[in-house]
Length: 489
Image (cartoon, rainbow, N blue to C red; front, side, top):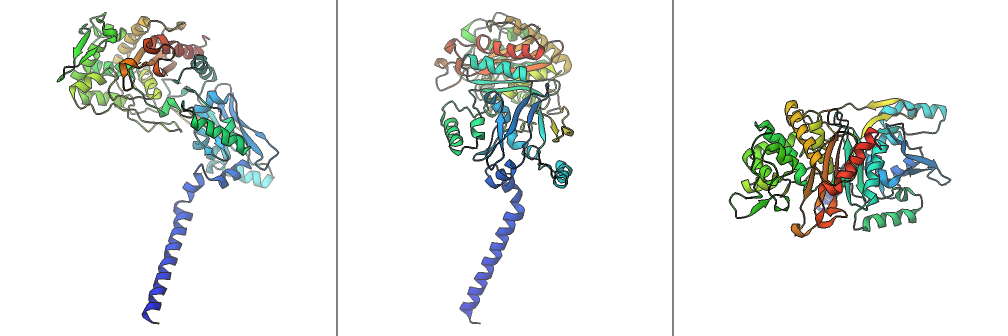
């Protein structure tokens, strides 16, 4: 064989080897990722041939999502009961646009393809029964979800509400508004699906964004709970004296940081400063504590954690660089670069309520077989393993938060139980002094035996504009959720 022919032969051999290697990579290495890709229409068509399992609440088994039979080739269509209210929890399941949220993360159970359902699938083949998927039992309490959703939508608020059981981490409500109706995406009419997808994605209000876990905001004065915990752990006491000055000059600058409205703080002790949400004392505390202490305390509240038992996309919260004492002062009041998700803000109150230990949030209570027998249960799990503050200091901070609740102005109807809370009014935007602030409220109740912790954010002042505060805008929503959990209406 002459030299040119030999080169051609070698080149062809190399191409064959590369082709075989690529085929092997696709069929072996990438097979599972392609199979689970929500855009894989062939897998979806196969799944639609089975009766998809339901999403149900642990409270009275209320169905959140099920299927209805159809006369078309897909056989079953997903149906969402109260779709917009539960969309941040369920996500969507669409033949053209794939899936999201719990519909995606729990797909193996819902379609029946989970290895733990193999015996059931084999039995279906032998007996000729129509194959069915398993079911997912949610931790959501429909009463709390409904109360929070109604309170947010009644006034057209943009924002989120997250509520959880502070002792277990079970999420009792996750509301994001404005929301969307996943039934349009679940339709078997391609035109209807396309129109729904276009409408949701082109909406400037971004209704498909789950603001509870996928958006971060400056937390304002709710972050003072972290600073207060760090100060208590460093030896501070409720009667520790603080400055009641209306402002303080940021170290190394000529810029001043003011109390809300530029007012003199009504109190002169640590506890009174939290009750009246005075900025100067907490900015000073943060500067004295230092970046390391603030970071370690924040981490034990879960800030920065990504290992959460939420099967949906969770954006981590953060404190920012904390590069100077001036930055610490501003961060100590929940401004500058501090950013929390509403889920994380809920964890602040929940951690205090649970004696200082943060619990890992979870949305799934149980995985169930088609016959409703248990496949897997979930047990409460500590989030970091290290308490954010001692149980004794958590009890002190709880009492200080009770004073804060008693001092909260506005907010409509008070709850029927003793609440421990903290409000926040957070500046944001390119012109923060002339931009309506975000309104926050984080709380737990009953204060002496906590059963629910809640966080509420109403973006850009809600209906109060520049006059908005956490107490006048967000507090009534949080209290509505608390009353729903505790049976107070």
